[in-house]
Amino acid sequence: MTSFDAPGDVDGTYPLSISPTGAITGNFTDGAGVNQGFVRTSDGAITVFDVQGAGIGAGQGTFTANINLGGRLRATIWMGLT
Image (tube, helix red, strand yellow):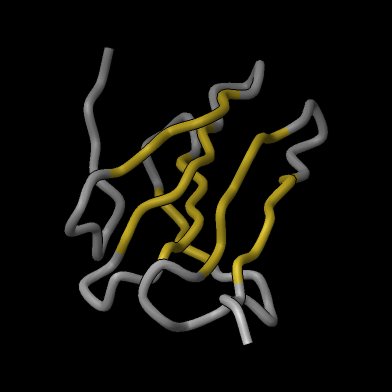
């Protein structure tokens, strides 16, 4: 088992899904309280991303759910209440 933190994480890195090739996806909260998604490849490289249109306020952002066999991600966004 290998532990890791996503770059910019201040409140915990939450891995939620792992593919058969060893890619891990999940989310974390940055210093502004915004949730961001990440993918960690089997060699340890981490890519942080935000889905276009995701909210940028505290408690908002990108929430990654899973990764499939082809490497495609499923994510949801939270834009907050208006």
